[in-house]
Structures are given as C-alpha cells and as structure tokens.
Length: 184
Image (tube, rainbow, N blue to C red; front, top):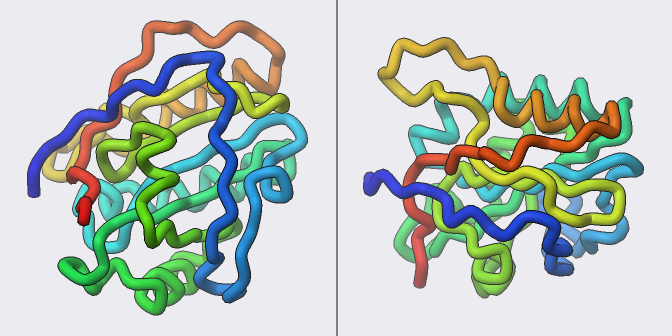
C-alpha cells in the first residue's frame, strides 16, 4: 500500500464526460444522466483499499442523505483488475450490494476517465455544482485507518452544505490520501 495524495484537479473546471458500465445494472451510464440537480460527487475508489474500506460505511450513509437534497454520487473504479482481481466488476457488484449503495458504481477499464480527472488515489473525492463545475476536491475528513480520529466526513460534508446553501466554498482544501490507483 503506497500512501498517495490526490492531485487537486483545478477548481471551476468542468467535469470530463464519460460513459461507463454500471457493475450492478450491467449497462453503460453517462455523466449527464447521473448528475444531480444541485451537485454531483464523484469518488474514485476500489474494493480492496484500506483507506476506502475505513470510511465506506460512513460515506454510503452520507451519500444516501445527500441524494434527496439534489446531490448525486457516482463511484468509479479504475484499477487494473488483472493485477488486482478483487477490484473486478463482479466483486464491485458484490461490494455495492453489501453496503447497499444508493449510487452507481462504474468500471473504468481503460483508465481514461481516471486520467481525465487526474485521479491519483483511492478514495479521491470531487464535488461539482449544478453546472458540473468543480467546487471541491480533496479529502473526506482527517480520519485514516488506525489514526483513532473518528470518521466524520466533515470536509466533504461542509463543502456540500456550502453548495446547497449557495455559499462560496473555501478554496483552502486538503488533498485526499489513500492507495495509489493501480495503473496498467
């Protein structure tokens, strides 16, 4: 496990479009069809990363609470499944069912989407406004596996609350930290 920070994609940049396979529905879905009315969270994650596993239950509950408020969530896995078979689409589907995801879990087999977002680690969080322009990127909160800091989601939650209340989101944002994306 190589501890890797996110690359901090430029704020106000438009979300790169994509059309990826939803591992549960077994059909391709497009960003435009999945974006939320008031905002969209995109998280690059995978099944085996201890940083993802650490916050996954809390994050899935957080995403479910935001959905009726108009902020949708999209999870994407871009890992090399030849070297990391636990991140294969069938395993992704099992994980989404185990945690009862209220959001699609998409597979990026070419890794082009991860590269377009300059994603570097899992988890890597992005929050876009209603025009799918980036307003927040970085960490979920300061908790890490074995840190003894309780999981709160405060960094991403505060950004979402600013967005919902139409207030400017502070630009002093901290990178996410996690396992590096497993490039081919």
